[in-house]
Image (tube, rainbow, N blue to C red):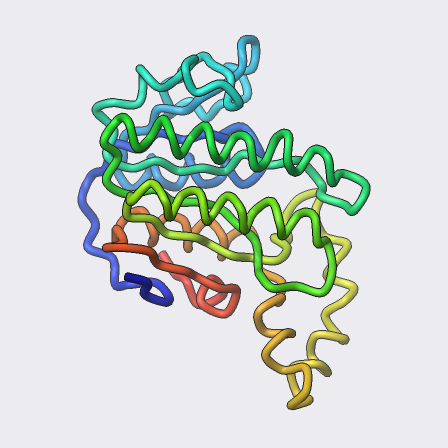
Length: 227
C-alpha cells in the first residue's frame, strides 16, 4: 500500500537509530528530535563522535557494512537513513552508487533483521530531468526498501537550502515562472527548493506519524511541514 503526504502527528517517544547523523541535515534533525523527547542512537565512524549532537548516543560503525552496526539497532523502533554524498553533482555518479545506494541497502537489510517497524529514508525528487545517476541510485534504494516489507516513508526533496547550501536560491525566479506555466507547473513543484527548517520538520513529522505500508512525501508536502 502506498499513501501520499504527511499524516497528522500523534507524538509519542520513539527510539530512533540514525545513519548519517553528522551531516548538516542530520545534526539539525537530531537536535529537534531530542527536543521532542525521542531517544537517539546515531551511527558514526571512529573519530567522528565529536560531530554528533550531545543529545544522541554514538554507535561506532561503518554505514556501508551492516555487520558493524546491525547488532546495535535494537531496541529502536524507527530507522532514519540520511547518508549521502555531500554536495551532489553529476561528477559523483560512482559515489552515488558506492555510498548513497550501498549505505541504504546496508541500513535497510540491518533494519529489517532488527525488526524496525518504520524506516524513514531521505530520497530525492523523481523523475527529474537532471542528476540522472543520483536519481537512479535513490530510486534503486527505494525499490530495495520496498522489497524488505518494512513500513517506510520516502522523503523526496530536490535541494535543501541551508548553511553552505544556498546557491540554488538564485533559481527561485525561474521556479516562480515555471510554476505558472501549465507545461512546466508539475515538474517545477516536484523539484521545488525546500529549506533546512522545512526538511527537519518533515523528518520529525514522518517519525511521529509512522507510515502503514509505503508513504511518499514530495517537495510540496515538505514545504507545508510544521512543528
